[in-house]
Length: 164
Ligand SMILES: CC(C)(COP(=O)(O)OP(=O)(O)OC[C@H]1O[C@@H](n2cnc3c(N)ncnc32)[C@H](O)[C@@H]1OP(=O)(O)O)[C@@H](O)C(=O)NCCC(=O)NCCS
Image (cartoon, rainbow, N blue to C red; front, side):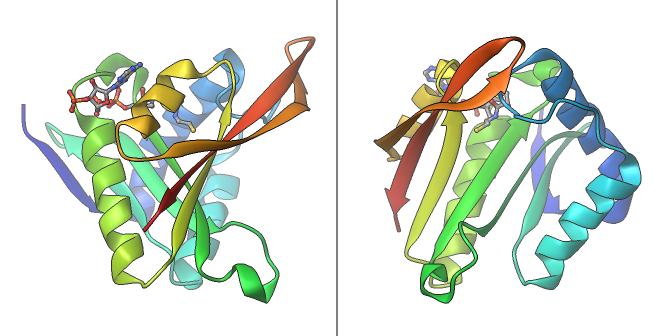
């Protein structure tokens, strides 16, 4: 099945929101407690695009089955060559190469924007994502213990980094 990677359009947001809200309700991949509204999510992407950061989607059979983006890691000026990214595939389409295409494209885009390094902040329980990132040359460079609290337990964040 062909997977196409393209730029995000506002019309994609509803399919993306389904992926995000599922992760919010059923996983520790996202540290939100409550589902997001469509308007809130559209605004989040709009802000990234306005700052010149990419938001991309993966499409299969004309359906959005994954998305990725990056934006500033932290807000102070000296961080301007560092970005933090996210990649998600629809849970019904895991392991089909969607994440690989999205992350490969984000790395290419970051290099083209002359960025220096990419950071991922991953919940320590999400070993799938940590292992997935290592395939792309990301290294574990940090561990922030008990940085989150969700589902009545403390969560730890693993920081992964790739030098571009
Ligand atoms: C992490 C995620 C984006 C990976 O996407 P995916 O589409 O399932 O992964 P792919 O099918 O593209 O796999 C790409 C490569 O990573 C490898 N890989 C994927 N999952 C892996 C795992 N759990 N362990 C080891 N390798 C893994 C694949 O074998 C493949 O390698 P190959 O090209 O050598 O065959 C996806 O599982 C996901 O969205 N998970 C839920 C949300 C999430 O955790 N997002 C990240 C938040 S930081």
